[in-house]
Every structure is written in C-alpha cells, then in structure tokens.
Image (cartoon, rainbow, N blue to C red; front, top):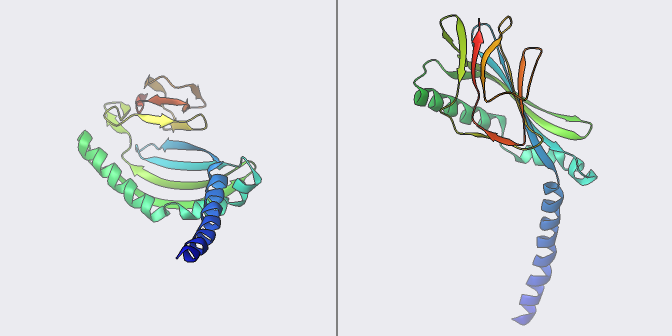
Length: 192
C-alpha cells in the first residue's frame, strides 16, 4: 500500500507543479481593455472592444495564442451582449435597443496581444428634440484598471453640451475616460 501511495505521489507532484508553473507564467500578463463607441447620425453606435494582455515576459507572449483561444468564444460574447442590451433597454424603458453585425479577431502588436470584438448597438443614443442623449446612469458603475479606457465618439457635426462624469480628455470630437477609476456610466447630451 505504501509503495502505491509513493508511486501516486511521485506521479502527481510533477503534474501539479507543471500546471502551477504554467498558470504562473500565464498570470504574469498584465491585462487592460479599451472600449470605443462611435455614434452615427442615426444614433447607432459601432462598438469596438479590445481586450489586451501585455507581454511582461517571453513566456506570456509565447502563451498568448493559447490563453486567448481558451477564453470565451465570440459567439458566447455575442449571446451575452445581446441579452445584456435587451435587459438594459427593458430596465431603462427604452425600445429598439439591439446588437447586430458581430465580428471578432485576434491581433498581436509590439508589447501586447488582443482579442477585438465589434458590433453595432442600434439606438444607442436617443433623440430628444434637437439633441442626442446617451444615458446609462441607471447601470452599474464601471471599474477600469490603469490600462483601460472608455471612448465615445459623438456623431459628426455634434458637440457635447453636457458630460457626466467629466471626461479626462476631449479632442477631435472624442470623449475619453482613462483608468484606474470606478465611475458611473457616462451621461451625455449632444447638440444635433
């Protein structure tokens, strides 16, 4: 019995250590994300979500493809996003919110790798008289780390009249919030 226990331990310990070492190498990556909402003249937004892993070591860079393929597929993200947008619309009493035209790909650049998901959020901004309103004050707060950002690009020819919370930067018709921070979703009123 002791001999079998010793053999079992000798077989398990290297496997556990190997798995722990792989997990440690993968976990050394630093993560961040950038989300951009580009609003068109109809109030629809083209959403681009870029989930990044920064290569903090050669091992993290080497494991990039493996870590990205083990994550949730684009189809799962599409399903969850459609459900979330529908639920948010119902909670806010908005009609006509939907998500469509999903696409996804991976890219590798100097210093990081990313999974990019894009889709169109129909009726993202609402018309109120001669203004566009983007209002998500009812939603949960956003948590952003130091390598994350949120950008909203208003429709061409509009200008921000009200921006809450105040953006970290406004340039070339882009409103940008940078992490690290916890903040409510933006409330915007834009001229038309």
